[in-house]
Length: 114
Figure (cartoon, rainbow, N blue to C red):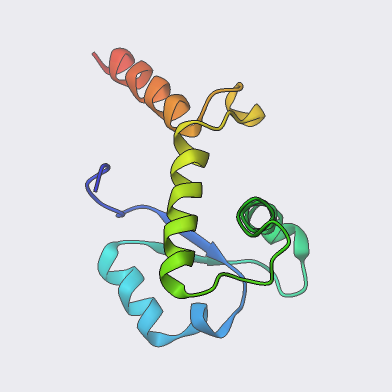
């Protein structure tokens, strides 16, 4: 909603059945999202996503097998994602949060365009 549209976005996934499904392809097409799939058996293609998911599990589940119910999972993941994007500093972003990094680069691009 903040960006207004997903048109032009790229969704990279593995070869899971859900990503090959006709319904998924139709939703992506309707939203203007380009689908991308890594090579079969090449873990490096998904290394970033696997690292992100491992961090999410480690920091939210803290060793537990899962959440007690779907509502709790949604709340805890939402809270974690919010912190991850708005307050957590990332070395790849120059030790600022992803939101601060994006805002700084967006403002810089607007200045260049003017």
